[in-house]
Image 1 (cartoon, one colour):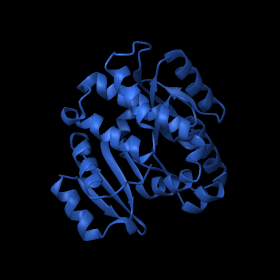
Image 2 (spheres, one colour):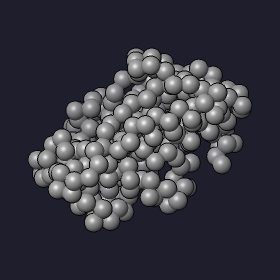
Image 3 (spheres, one colour):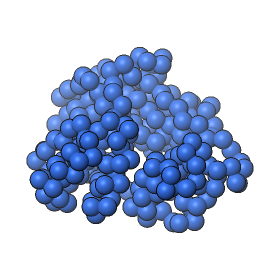
Image 4 (tube, one colour):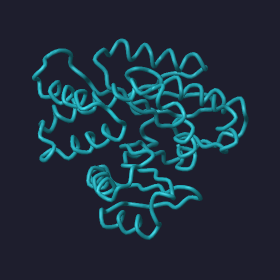
Length: 250
């Protein structure tokens, strides 16, 4: 979704963070295990793991949970195999969605995601049907009261950010995926906690939603997907007025 729509959604979701803390810990734990599996257990030599540990601490994730996730990824605890999956689908109004999943049960994930789409009249699509309209980028959303524009612009440029967009109440920084960890670490060292930080799928073309019923269905679908145990992130090519976002904040 577009930056300012994503920002409004981020603010709206923050009110429910505590209620979803178990889900947040579960998602980060799986990411830590995957990063450890792919790059080793030493964060000094594994930038992705180092970034995720910082993210876990910012979410107040207990140290024992972090250690257990690292050990699981290193194969020290045995147990289940975690996989990363991507689902593509269409929601109301022709909105295209990409759903990132980390799971230990592919059948459960597929069933849950398919059910969420079908409940609002959407449907899953084949591989590439939606993804062609997206580019994979690092994305950071940061409230303006956290840092002066000159300072954050310089920090972004020094760390090879691709773009920095100044909105009325927040900044959006976009970078290549290869620069994401370095930029995340630079922000952390500067004492800035991003309100949203992820390797995102950013759409090339946007579907503008202007009617309340379509907005309600799209937001219901996105929130249903985000509530699923295995879903890591949902990316959409829609935009809508903040008034519509606020109208259906419940």
